[in-house]
Image (cartoon, rainbow, N blue to C red; front, side, top):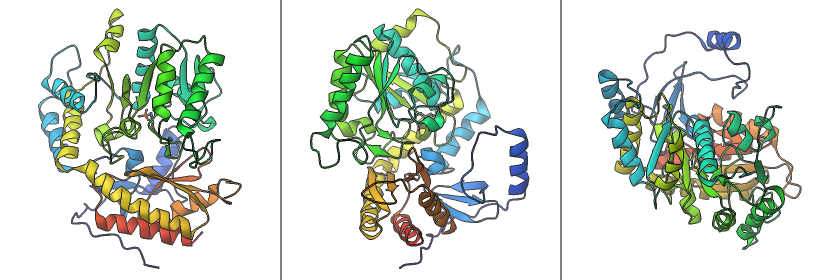
Length: 446
Ligand SMILES: Cc1ncc(COP(=O)(O)O)c(C=O)c1O
């Protein structure tokens, strides 16, 4: 087996002279939210990043295979993005939406140019949870209906409405939430009732949405929300036809369709700019965050002029909605994706890595499923391929081994049994080779 070697980087990080990781950890324990969790037995502290690489306080370099949880889209400290942010920071950091500023309009126009159909009106917010909360409000106002269909195994945010739409017990506090939200069966071919071998699985899973509308709602719904590939749920790809059939059922019940593109947008799936396009549908509302800002707090809701008009009954305000600095960053990110053909690179490198992972699946029986598109790849681990018992501890061990070899990866799925891989979209051929070698060596140790 090849010893994985991290490809060289021309970047020299600054020498880190700040507080030690132990001091930062103690500070965090004393002064920060005790609910936040850390990866790895020995937590890592990162102090610098350049493109696909990130350095810890000791000067050790890693390939960032999770991209700050699917957030670093074009690369850490990308020079075009940094220049746009710096230029705007020097002139005006904030003004708010009650005044005009050229950046927000220019960004909105650029973002709208990336959207299909009539999806042309942008609302800017600060996080994915906020974007989904706003989308839910719009769906209810526009349709005058209340009920919403979401999916099991979904993650849509940590605020009250996001928690309601989410369907993983892990993320749901024991408080009243989810009013009017009903969760349909996850279209999860590896674990669900209709598998990869069922050519009609998309339609069959969609029938559950119809069934839920008929049994659990007044027969009318405000809408349906789904991630185009479930992210936190372990990069679950829906069978073809699922969204098409589901959208038909939802629209027949008076509802509108919301695509949560927080993880799947901005070219990451490789074949398409938006995840929903891989299913041949056009939603009525699209929510986005994470990759839109390459690490800065920026999120958006994009909808049609008709739906946007339903918000006119009241004043709607968001202090930072389209702040000049984040707008400059958002526009710069879109420019980089185009100029550097990062969607094309996601497809090329994603296909290459996926082919390598398929070979590893044939070699290691602990790999139950390899799935995903472009640079959004999941490896579901099972103790036994027949029972599909989740290999939770083994998945955590793969993360540790990969880290030792210089590769950061994530995990997801209800039981933490699925490796999640979503690096910045600028990775190279040499990186792709390194990544497959690391997975091979890490699985060999299990
Ligand atoms: C698909 C999806 N939607 C929404 C959210 C919530 O985004 P945020 O953490 O920015 O509120 C997340 C976060 O992981 C997500 O993965």
